[in-house]
Length: 367
Image (cartoon, rainbow, N blue to C red; front, top):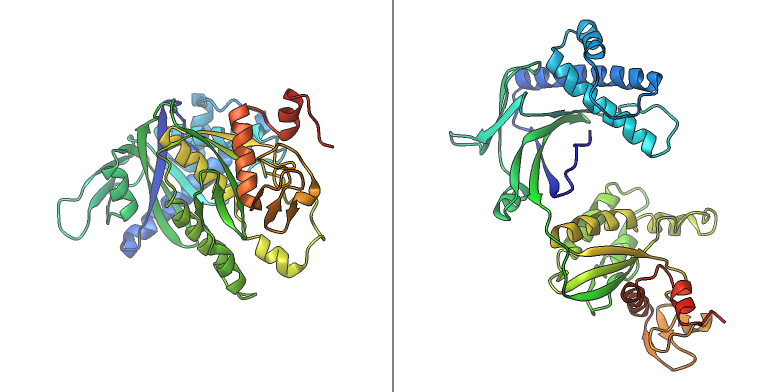
């Protein structure tokens, strides 16, 4: 469930799988998560029936109904009701008319139910204690991960809240880290970024990453598993090579609906390869990174950015042939993605959404 966000605080998570948990503790935790799942679904059904989409704390009579039905404590009932209320509120904000169904056994445990401390003995690094108030009294030793160590080294503060869940028979705990949001940069460059699954991620300041991803996509076999997970990992590794220090504003394309209406246009083989273009994953990664670096992320209209000349500011569909760009007016020659990145930078500097608005401000239009 989503945690309440503070506008001045950034939150990140680091997941640890409980592979070393003994059978007895595993069964206790699994039973507890199953109970929490049933209680939260009960509250979801109740709030949806009442048309209560406020996301606020439930009143005591409502909590007592669940307490009597499931045999839980009032404190646990209040916590689960709050999470269920937020789930219903989120569903309503997305304009979805169907009642949410909780697929996974996941629960957020606050400091009333859990404590986190370094493990004093050898073999483990962290000790998560479930201290009651409705949760089972249990000690869960954990080994640290590289992500946790990296977060702590970078100055992130470990929250007193955790997420615990069960997915495909595996128990896990999400550690939650918090950090004060840095102010937006006041100095630096406005940089445009163009991306596609064939040529990787291209920035207008000449940085290019992820070119090898396309070759790897072509090597995948038809029934090979975990290909999207591999591409997601490769994309994350590629973006870590980008130098963000001189960037003040990052201007990217709005490709949210780029695949809409394209069904039946391409072959099945090409569609399978195109599905590995994880644009939404890329945008989510950029949103988090820009938030951490104090970079303003702006989204622009991709209309004609690959056919518009960033040198003479004139458009012609003949300018682009494949990956090559050559302006028929001024002769400007460049890679098509580099030219598109420069056009996105142009829109970022001008502070307009698309090339139509940019040309209107200059009393020009597409011929």
